Image (cartoon, rainbow, N blue to C red; front, side, top):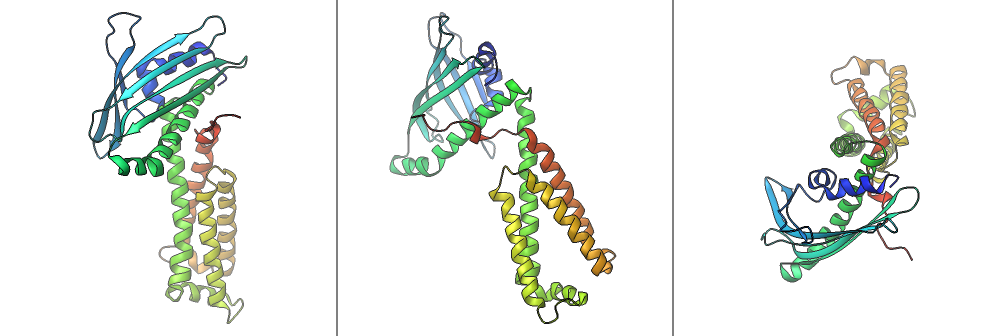
Amino acid sequence: MNSAAEEVWRLTQTPDLHEQWDLRFSSIDYLPRPDENAPQQFLYTTRIGFGLTIAGEGESVGTRHKENGQSTSALKFWSDDPKSLIRRGSGYWKYIPNGQGVRFLTWYDYDTRFGPAGRLVDNLVFRPLLGWATAWSFDRLRLWLEKGVPPAVSFRLSLAHVIARLGLAAAWIYQGLVPKLLFPEMGELDIWRSTGLFPGLERGIVGAVGLAQIVFGLLFLLAWRGRGLFIANVVALAVLAVGAAASLPSLYTAPFSPASLSLAMIALSLIGFTVAAELPSARRCRRRPED
């Protein structure tokens, strides 16, 4: 992170600031310490949806070395909440100045409850999801430090990006699958016949167009970070609109005109392209130790 070590320490060691960028915690509350040398005990909660939360406890010890500027924060955490998959665990944060900023490292591990079933769920779902949330949160912290993008803004931009991508993917896949592949007799074949192009091949052409639309919709899911796909979508919709207006202008005066759908999809594309400029990404964090 291209930021001063003091600022990184402040945003990660102050509870009300930490909980703003760390997706894994909804609230963190420090408990009073009997003296400065005692571990800092804290309470935490995590919202898991549907009005449910998981509560836990922990303690941390921070060490700062003035000689080389490095710092370490070690912690233990546990939860007696029966809803929590995590029984207890430990980990650390390490802050290493590198001349350009701070290299921020983390490691943690934990034990699960619910026996073999809990371990299976942890290995297949929970641990990969928690690893992604850790990396995504670290990059959200980086944007706050380097670009001045508040964590709440990062979250809203990310949500807008998800809605734009899923909306465009769903629209293209639906248009390719339902009216062209599943029910072409309901209007798509008649529209193509009215153009007078390639008589006798209407069904094959409509099916091929439907497959192309499905593939294009899937690209919005597979190429998740590709901003250029939004511009390609605007260009594709503009070309299709011009072609439809030239070959069959009555489409744009009929009920449920495709013009309204095209305009909505163009608007989603422009929103997606705009908000994707500065989004947190788990890919920017190294998820495995270096050799």
